[in-house]
Image 1: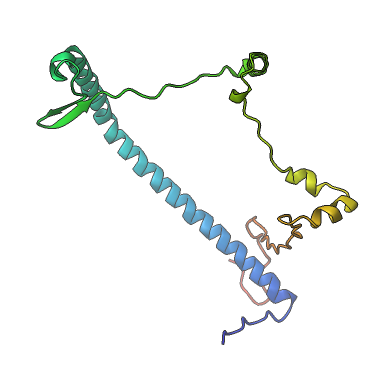
Image 2: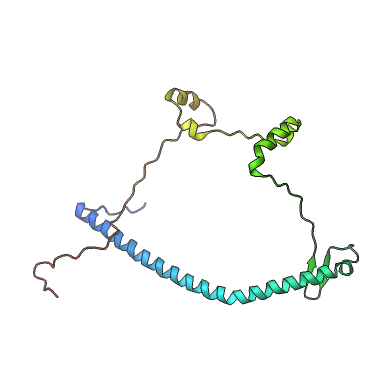
Length: 181
């Protein structure tokens, strides 16, 4: 059996709980800000350390590529192999896949041309259910649609939100009997 949470006794206790939630939110925001600053500082140190190494690696990569390109026939035994193994690693040449580039500004003209050339098999037609359209349907249409297997109208769920005041608390006058500092 689970223990029930204690219920707040009155509006003042509820307001105090919400106020405390606001304090916690401010404390968490401060912790998050400190964490972000620490991550930012660590990132800068790492990037500053990595930059010269990345530059050196890029330079070496260009030199290795140039050497291998200049010596490719010998290294690949006149094209008989695509991979060359060195004592410290390997290099290889691979032919990528053919790609088709379609100019977005020409799509309508290309579709018309493919249709005119009777090459419709290269035209993709997609169809999908308009969920926004169905949600905007009239009540009579909704009744008909609700009979379709695979469609279900899910009623909206209710959410409960607590929004503590984000501003810092205002100074309050001292309580009776307290000395003013």
